[in-house]
Image 1 (cartoon, one colour):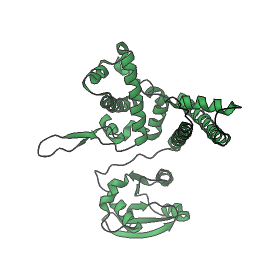
Image 2 (tube, one colour; image 1 turned 90 degrees about the vertical axis):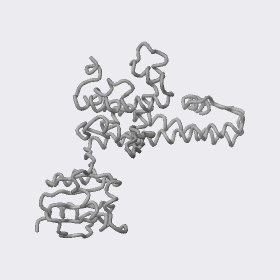
Image 3 (cartoon, one colour; image 1 turned 135 degrees about the vertical axis):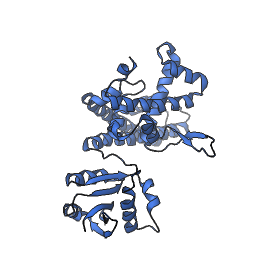
Image 4 (cartoon, rainbow, N blue to C red; image 1 turned 135 degrees about the horizontal axis):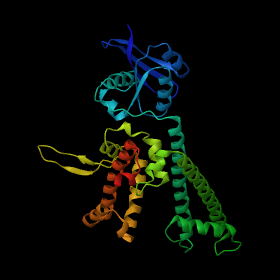
Length: 339
């Protein structure tokens, strides 16, 4: 009998495949090693292959598509209900095979190598920024024990790090001075690495027309635009702007029942990094609105009049996500749409 659907449970070295025919007959359910993967799928006829969207899934999806298979990635949370009993590789592969055949199953678009290369830059930058924050807090805490305080903001910590690095004599004990100088050197090195990564992200954005379009949206800078293109890719992945906003986690939770509509806080599902970038960008937009109200969208001013600043920030981020989808879908700049 001919294989029509395969459920593939990914792993580091030992994978598991579950194959069925067109009428649902189980043809195989067995493990295969990493070195056998490509040869195994070369021997199979072109069929539907389901996988969970997890580590290495985009790589394997690209490789199997080259062999002519229809590969679909699914969120792991949507696959879990199809696991009948227990937890094993065989049961997971069977659940994936069943889930991918559901007509209403939501899938994840397969990222290209270019998208994942951009994401490498963002993941590295996020890691370095968190390490810079840790070092800044350590320096502040240690200096506080000697009565030295630094103003709020990473820029002031960097200024002190440059001062202490070049200082020949301070009021600090010799042992403490060595520790602070060591931490300051690490902080300055991390900051240089972050600036280098940001320049690389900016350079990549100059050559991508989609990033240029997104930068025309108020509150969207080059780093946020680059992250959106690297993560979302095309607007065709979502049916509407609300779907994109919901995927980022900016839409309210719906707990309606008995004909009564009850909406809670935002779901906070989906990509946390994109959600953070959008909220931070809209926070700067609110600061600009308060200092220059004559240059601000009247809708933003009305939101600020009715809602606290944080609620307004999330509401504007929600609407901006929908604008992002429209800009990508129509391939037009934000200014052109407004006119």
